[in-house]
Image (cartoon, rainbow, N blue to C red; front, side, top):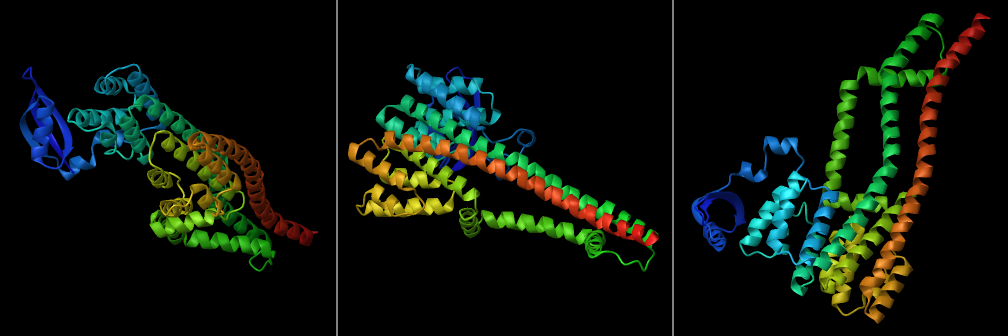
Length: 409
């Protein structure tokens, strides 16, 4: 698909400008005529325009915040449920949206819908704002004629997911700040404090004074950092950058997620978050009437963990071959027994979506408990690490001073 900018005249012979994404110029003309517009100028946008690189984009974030997306979803659900025509509802929400990014996206969506596209297809062109789960549920709602109900489910799901993310970020904020302070304090002491202390000790005890091993060790580290900081800091920065880039590759991401699932404390939270997301997303898609295999495919991409994603994709293959999902899940050690048991009950009663909602609620509560437990462990651990660092430096300073005082006596 190519983006085209156009100038056209409406029925009142007023100029209308905009940007649309179509296969070719003929498709643009056809789409404009469906909107009762007479095209005057159609130009293919440049790569610079497509990238959206502008001063406005530099000053304003192009990412749609979850809170804005949830509000839009709830408002659209209410308006559609009240019988407001879809285009009118979208136009009203675009005009009153507080998010510049969402407003710009909705303008494009409105033009696509006016051109004859389904809402789900129009939203699918903006994957950064509307993910696969969102798009597939909207498509299912349009097909079944229950778009307002589906949008309510989507809003609830987004709120639950956002709540989990906020709690995880909140739990990690304090340890992250402590780690940053510890690193800055360490290099600050090594670069500015320890060299001065070493000079003072040498002046007092003389050049031939024998310093304790711990003091010599700290002075050695300080001398190394002071003498080669222009090499050490770029190496550290380059190493961190290279590691982050590697983690973004398919192989690096897979290895990173496997390591996370083996770390004590953290693995418990990751597993419970993945299971809660699986249950919530699969339930929402099933409730929207999406086919089971499509549900599994979309759910796998929304879990945020490659290991669990592969497990769900493999499960979809087994289900396609005729095996019940509950049996497949029960054979995978990544999923607790309760998930398979609840799935089995859902398959027997035909209420898989309702059963999985209870599973999602249960594991979201478990995530809260696990995060609180991890926070209670991390905070004292970081305090001990910082105290140990300060104590090590104090010992390296006080030991030679005590030895010199003894010699003076």
